[in-house]
Image 1 (cartoon, rainbow, N blue to C red):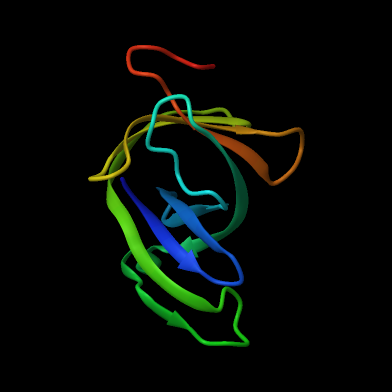
Image 2: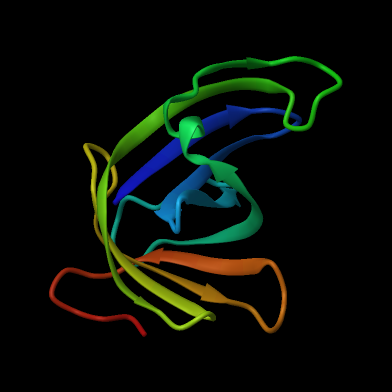
Length: 125
């Protein structure tokens, strides 16, 4: 399965983490960027799923449209789903910038998640 991380310069600069799942790209906006060092934690806000064709999108979303601003691919590659319990997702990224084990843990009953990179050889759960 593929993943893509978009650098999205909209009303606020952020990254969008997208994981292929069931024929769509499940998506989270990550205001401070995807962590690349073990132990770093970031807020990730789940947003609507995107179509698979969006995995290759780079360009300008025009003013007046949802997500207006410049979008570029920050990193892209393959990933392995380790576990998805609905409220916690474990996955391994194989990108050029983002690589290794990651976790997404949902805050109680909402669209906000905690995204973190797991320390090598350990599990931060």
